Structure formats: structure tokens, C-alpha cells
Length: 253
Ligand code: NAP
Image (cartoon, rainbow, N blue to C red; front, side, top):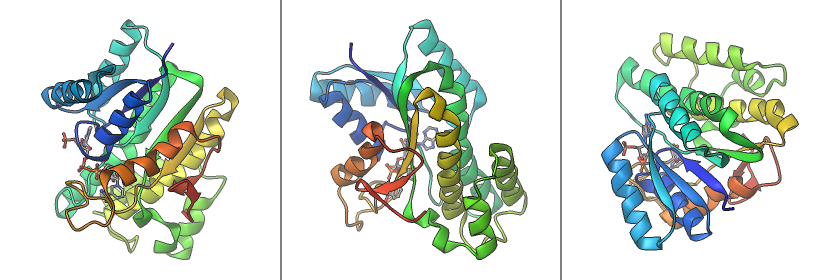
């Protein structure tokens, strides 16, 4: 029986490339997309290109209802997940407090919501890969924030409360933009879930694609989509857990 992967935000960019590579490797791939038509179109495109098994799943990572509906659909189809890739993300979503809220909601609460919503569908021994960024490195924050984010006593509730407070404060006080804060919090969440899910043999890592030529990264970025996706894919089969990696090498985060 083939392994199954679900990738959020897989209708374009790095997520689409990750879907492509996993399909080529013989995985059954669920192409997550918030827009149903874009998801169907991407899945059809990838099926045509690879001749493999890919299906679209409508999934907006900012919506509890959307995640619940996706989970129900998978449950109805008796689908179990071997690899979840929390790839969907936004950068520079909008200016001001609205942009801060959208960035934290998508990049931090999105992976949290999707992981919790799909947890019962993940097989024991599955992997979760959170797509992060070097901009979330602890070195970008002051001592107090650094200690807080790296504190082994930090709980999921406290981390989420900290992110809600950051949004309430309009993104002020961290000395970094909302994108960097969202990815630093995602790295912390990765460490928390790694500990929490270890009894089930689920490995949880964050992987950074580097600066990649996508709609987000822009044309001037030094890395190809293939390179970025390869860096992300390390998490799908990693034997490690709780780490932050770029190109399979741990990075300080
Ligand atoms: P991209 O080309 O802008 O694609 C982003 C994807 O995320 C799209 O499929 C988008 O869907 C989806 N998305 C956004 N909000 C969503 C939501 N609420 N629900 C579901 N899907 C949503 O970006 P990318 O460069 O491939 O980035 C992928 C990941 O890599 C992100 O997490 C990003 O932060 C990270 N990353 C990228 C770079 C880089 O240089 N590109 C560097 C470091 C990290 P729509 O088409 O519907 O908008």
C-alpha cells in the first residue's frame, strides 16, 4: 500500500513541487488548496505531468470549519496520513494590524489548527513537516524572547496566548516583523509537538527552503523551486524529531 501525504498550499510554489516529487516517488498525494478550483486544477496538472495518484483537498488553514470538513472527508474515505507538510504561508500579506493578524493566523495558527485537526488521521510513525524560514531564527530576537521561545517549559497554550497578544499589540514589541515572529513561533511549536507526539512515533521537524524563486520569493531569489522543495522534503522522511533544518543540516532556530 502506498504512503499518503497531505501538503497544504500545494496549488502553486514550493508546495506544488513537493506534491510533484512525492507523487513521482510513488506516494498518494493530497493536494491541499484553500480554493477548490485551484486545487482541482493543480491536482489535474500534476496527474497529467506524472501519471500518478494525486487528489485535491479543499483546505483553508485559517478556518476551523474548513479543516474540520477536510478531516471529515478524509475520514469518510478511510484515508490515513503518513506525512503532513504544513507548507501554506503568507509573506507581506497586507500592511498594518490586518497584515499582522493574517500572517500570524496563517503561518502559526494554520499549522497548529491543521495538525490538531488531522492528528487522529495521522498514522503512528508519521512525519509532520512545518515549512519555516531563516527569518524565524532566534538570533533575530532579544534575549527575553529568545529564552521564552526556547524554554522547554513553554506550553502550547502559552505560545498561542503569546501570539494572540502579539496580534493584539498590532505586531509591536518584538523587534521583528510578523513573518519572522510567525516562523519563530512555528519553530517553537515544532519542538512542542515533537515532544508531545513522540509516544506515537510521530516525528515533527521544521524545514526551511531557503530563498526561492516563487511568487513569494520573487524572481531575484537565488534558489530554484526544485532546490527549495528538496530542502523541505527532508522532513518527510527524517529520522530526527524536533529539529529545524535547511538542506538536511540543522540550523540555529
Ligand atoms: P507562494 O508561492 O506564495 O505559495 C503559497 C501557497 O500557500 C499558495 O498555494 C497559497 O494559496 C497558500 N496559502 C496561503 N494562505 C493559505 C491559506 N489560508 N490556506 C491554505 N493555503 C494558503 O509561497 P512559497 O514560496 O511556495 O512558500 C511556501 C512556504 O515556504 C511558506 O510557508 C513560506 O513562508 C515558506 N518560505 C518560502 C521562502 C521563499 O523564498 N519562497 C523562503 C522561506 C520560507 P493561494 O494560491 O490560494 O494563495
